[in-house]
Image (cartoon, rainbow, N blue to C red; front, side):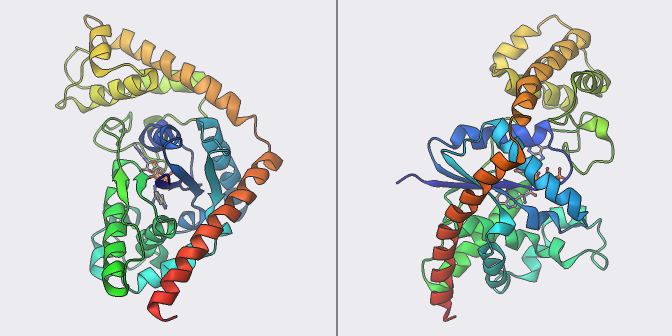
Length: 324
Ligand code: ATP
Ligand code: LTN
């Protein structure tokens, strides 16, 4: 039997190349070797206020992006989180074994709650429990995510182990899959911050749906560090980030990239990076336009049905072992 993968993204904001290089690209690469479940986590999206019409639209748009990136519905199960009610049911059970202290340590809550626990939503606080429930319902072996999700994944592992100790072996304890290169693509405007959908400055991110002009302008305006050589150097986060993007989009090795840019300056480098990005995005954006809503629904409905058969099995064992 193939091992299982689960991952998901929120249908909020606009997906950027950080989401692609840190997560989606690996989802696609791993779907042959594993039985894969890729979820559109709309229940996570409502941890912050969303406009209902926009949320519905963005949910379908995100499905289009999964497909355009190369997630293959013949091999992988793609579905919408709220179509599988077991996610919220298991989340309740897990919330009864999770501890306040471990949730208080989650750095994303501190960031997204803007340090104001008094005003922050309870859902934002308990969000990592819903994420654990997403993962554990499918007896997941591997979870491909970016670096920012590592702490949430550790909580998922802790909850699985705690449940197994208390009520008998029920959950597979999932492993994170965090790529060596691309796990944390940085903002083009501030290489100390990760590229983020929720960044107010759109110049920091290259969105997957940006047009060629916008991409080129954003790359030309990207901040650089002192020094003139184009090489990987931990002490120069801006060039490191831009070269990592170039490396992953072109599929070259780190050595090939350094060799390629030996003796060249920022002007040449930025032009080539812009060209490589535009060349990557063009066919991607063509594919996004290929899927109409009807085609999407024809993929998402059977996806949810398949997901439910597995999710309800796991939830059944959980209830049984707890005496529910
Ligand atoms: P936000 O950008 O507002 O923090 P998010 O992009 O983390 O939100 P999702 O869309 O759910 O939220 O993320 C989907 C995946 O993309 C996750 O696996 C996440 O770890 C990964 N990811 C997000 N930002 C980056 C980044 N800058 N570099 C690499 N991977 C990223
Ligand atoms: N928390 C993640 C999205 C997410 C997820 C998941 C990722 C929700 N459930 C399960 C992997 C597995 C985020 O905000 N990026």
